[in-house]
Length: 79
Image (cartoon, rainbow, N blue to C red; front, top):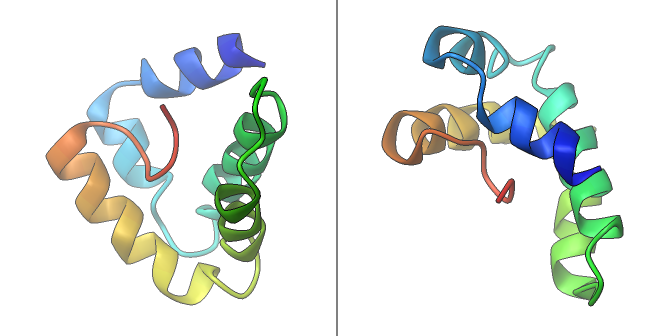
């Protein structure tokens, strides 16, 4: 799973920006949940936040991800 996260983080900037589009941004939400589930020490707060970014959070998370990609060159909670 970490290989998938590394590949997503290794995408070109334009592709990362396209993944921040509100409907397509659900991909980042799913990656966040999978990233949190595969960590050896699961942080409950980060997992709940990752789950909430899939559907209810999609209304505002695209903006957070857009800013995060422009500043840090990766989506929020994908490290």
